[in-house]
Image (cartoon, rainbow, N blue to C red):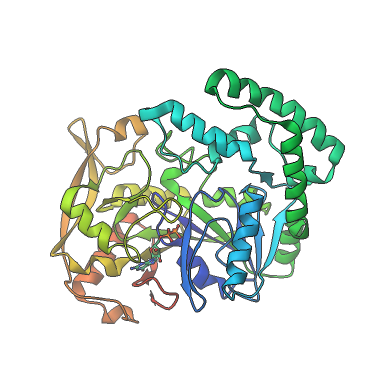
Length: 424
Ligand code: GDP
C-alpha cells in the first residue's frame, strides 16, 4: 500500500511532523521530488531537527529511507545531513539512493545565485539551492545521473562537453569566473565515493516491497500552489509537488497510491514572492508570525520571515482537489487560540465578480479576498487529546473548513510534537 503525504498550500504546512508520526506504521519512506531547498521540522525524543534532503522517517530503526529518482540530489549535503543525525545520537538510518537520481552540480548553485543577481528586483526569491538550474539541465538532457558517476570514460567526456556550454554563459552572460573541467571531474569522483554505499535501483526495490505487502510513504515537499503546472506559475518550484508525481519520482505504479493525505495549515503562510490573496500585513501579521509554527514562522532552510495570512478556503479547496486528497490533516490549529475572531477567505473578487474557483496567475493578481468571520475560542488547546474535548468554537472552525474544502479532516494537529494529534 502506498500513502502520500503532500501539501495543499504554499508549503510549510507541517508535513514533516505528519510524516514522522505516520512513519511509525510504515516500512519505506520516499522523497520523490525537490531537493534541499525546503525543510521539514521534526521534534522527537532525539531533539529538534530541520531535515532538508532526508525523508522524515530516518528516526525510526525499522524504516528504509529512499531518495527517489525525482529528487535533486546534493551529495555532500546528504552526507552531512546523515552525519548530523548520527552525531546527535540518532541510530544510523538505512538509506537508499536511486541510481537514476540526478546530481546537484556545484555550478547549479552558482547559476542560481548569478541568475537571481542578474534579475535583481525581478528575481524569483529562490532559496539558491540550485533547484531551477538543476531541473533545467535535467530536461535539457545535460544533467548527470548518479549511475554515470560509475563510468569514468563517459563521465569525463560529458563533463568537458557540458562545461563548454556553461563557460560560454559564465563568460558572456554573467561575467563570472569560468569552471575548470578537471576540477569538476575530480569533485564528481569524490561524490561517487560518498554516495556509493547508498546507491541502488530503488524502483526495483519498491516494486519488491509492494509485492511483499509493505507500507510505503511518499513524502512531498512544498505544496500544490508551488507546483509548476497547477501552482502560481512562475513563482513556483521546478519539480511537481503533486502526489501523482510520486509515482514517477519514486518509480511505482500510479494505482498503488491509495491514500493521499493532504496537509492543510489552519492559517496561511508562504515564503518567497508570488500571489497570496489572503495575505495580512503590519502588527496583525507580526503577531501571527510570532505565535505561528513552533517558535515563529521563519523558513526552515533560509530563516526568512514567512509571509502570513488568514485561512484561504479557495486556494485550499483547489490545493486538495489537485492533489486528489482522500483525507486532510489540519495543522497548527493551537496557534489561533489568541484570536477574538477568525477571518476565513471564502471567495475571490476579481473585476467585481466573486468566484470560489482558484484562477490562473494573471487573474489572481487582481483578486481581492472575501472574508467570512468565525468566533474565536480564546484558549489554549494544546494537550487536548479527543475531538469532543475541543472548545465548541474551535470545532466550528474545523467543521467550517471541512465543508469549504470538501475533504474529510481526519487529523487535527494541536502542537509540534509527534503525540500532539487528535484523530477523528
Ligand atoms: P513542512 O515543510 O510542511 O514539514 O513544514 P515545516 O516543518 O517547515 O513547518 C511547520 C512548523 O510548524 C514546524 O516548526 C513544526 O514544528 C511546526 N508544527 C507542525 N505542526 C504543528 C502544530 O500542530 N502546532 C504547532 N504549534 N506547530 C506545529
